[in-house]
Length: 198
Image 1 (cartoon, rainbow, N blue to C red):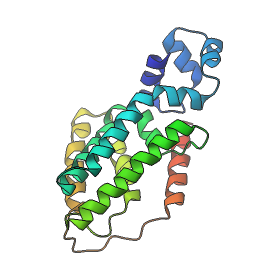
Image 2 (cartoon, rainbow, N blue to C red):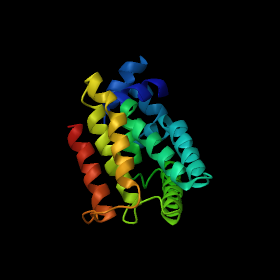
Image 3 (cartoon, one colour):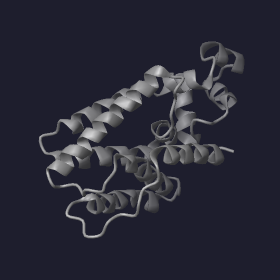
């Protein structure tokens, strides 16, 4: 069932019908619900390994010998996620207050990313006005390219990441426009996820 959920969520996102997961797994919806009473339970179990890997990558980036390389490695890793897993992309930009382990891991990784950003700025390599809350925007941009379903355009995602990293590099000559409040940004992301999945 978890393998089926991983496939369905990767293709259609975490709001895909539970019946689609049951069908892919070859079980009845009652069996699925008996094992995973809520959608959040299924999401947490499905993405447990992926989230653990994400936490490890963030921790490694936060202690990298070269702070700028740590920043670039993490951004490149994160920007590859939308190319193969729409569901995990949504998990990284959605709050799950009722799923303690998942939310704790997401917050831990974000704290490490804040440290990545601080170290890269202190080293004089990252533009001073970069915000850790810009990360979801990068995910959205790469996700838009990945969802084009055009092989040539999807491959161009690597070029997009290259542009993003160059835009992040210090010294920067032009200030960025002001950012929306973080809470408003995440609320907008969650609303967008719901619209995308009907």
